[in-house]
Length: 259
Image (cartoon, rainbow, N blue to C red; front, side, top):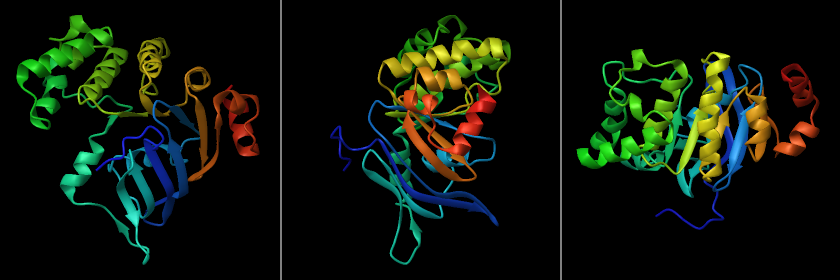
């Protein structure tokens, strides 16, 4: 059973390694995220940020290391160096603790906004249709899109699609939200509305791990900033400390380029 005490990390990754063929994408990444904490992961393209995020909810399997979600092992490595996952049903149960928002929305184009939100709660969780609709409508109001419930995704702006995607992930009532560069596909003027929604979640103490290139968001909203480069987590510091002095030359050079 999960350990629900508040001092148990919501995410605990230890020495996570992942390769695609001969390309070692993650080279022993370790990171712990506390309950209610917002951690921003930044770094250059190709540094392994998105792959690391995908390893935390089984969209990618790891080659070695350990991943625990709220104290429950999703992946572990035995004494012989073999990576082990639980049975599929157990993996699905553990991964249900996390919701994920992708760079490119991934909405179903043939479903309305409301239908996009209620599909997974009804099919995966067995939520009654009326209850799923009530949950969805409350979340659409939360992200400022109540009036778009009957629209199809093609009728929405990029920022609106991403806010729908956030609401859809929240519809599954996760304990942790993972964001994979949620604003990188948006025009600059649409980025603000998505970041406002994420700020509100942070204010409500939602545990969030955010891969982002938005330095303003990382500085203002995240409690900690983790910097990755070439498959390694180089440094992780409180946000104010990181932006005052990243503490590592590679991180310092990255910041000078971004700011």
